[in-house]
Image (tube, rainbow, N blue to C red; front, side):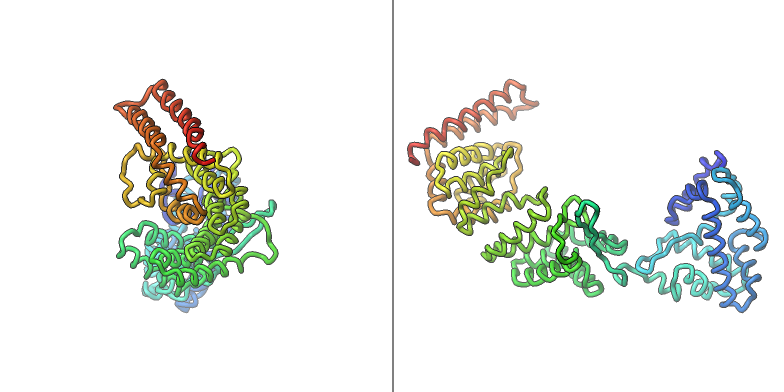
Length: 482
């Protein structure tokens, strides 16, 4: 193709507006293939036009040529032959310019997607020119020739298309060479998910949730296999406190999902593929419902299933699994699940503290409990069952943003389920030595929060005090717990 094609922005822009992908590339690399496709489309349109008008096929070809900006079919045919016989990368700018009006015939329509505004306008302009050339009414040409180019029975049917009415399965399941499985979404499914996100993701007020619920129920009436919508509907009922309805819905959609997976498949279904995430969220929601209903055997089963399917555990099941084991009275299993090699952080310390207490390891309990408390002082409000009174003070979190809602849902039941744990924790919180240590840390931390960033020396001083107290306070408390 001539180098001048690089400046032919209008041709490429028009193709982009009509959602015709990479037309400049294909005309450069394979002009014969593009021209062959245009030949087929023009002849198809002429056949439909001849049937609609009663004209001969040759007359219909001439009318098509006029509508596409050529005087006769002969001149259009010669122009296309000239392009197709050109070596790749040598099609002239002038040749491309004359094909601009023919781009409308390359629009790819789908039975489950409405045409874009630009695509509709392009067909209407083409129909208007064809009406002038053939003498037929525009409405008839839109209902015959233009709708036929879109695979439709009428122009109204073409314009009323929506992914809600697709007959193509929304999901399928594939297994790759690494024996990893993933769900594949159809194009209609992609669009439905985008629409669902628009109405549901940011719905905070009761009115917004109610509107989202109506949209979801309507979507499921049209597409009962829309699994993402089933997940969101179950989540709405769960958030409303209707566990029975939430479980009924989530169970049904997990069953639908797993029916897509080949029987006997035991490989991974990892979170890394974004199309798999709805399945993990379904399993998480069912696990949460079982937990709230105290059906711990089923709850633990779903937790293990998630960890097996997705070892990277992006949702953090590994953190709540030991807590649920504590609720179920399986202390040794909980302690084993809470080992967390090469991991630290307030949540790890908190879980280890609970599990070490449950198996009688008092030094381990004290060390981890004090670590969690000193890292995130807001934990005091959890241990004293006073989270509603938690003030919004930075020194209570120390740049850490704990998920207090999840902690309350899973840590609190474990906390009160292990005999003696709550009493031991509250006793420590009232110990003068602990209260004094917390005050020292608070004073030191607040000293760092003056205007401007702390110096390395200031921060190192805070770290040194924190480590010193984490190591010394458990030793001072140990005598009371022997």
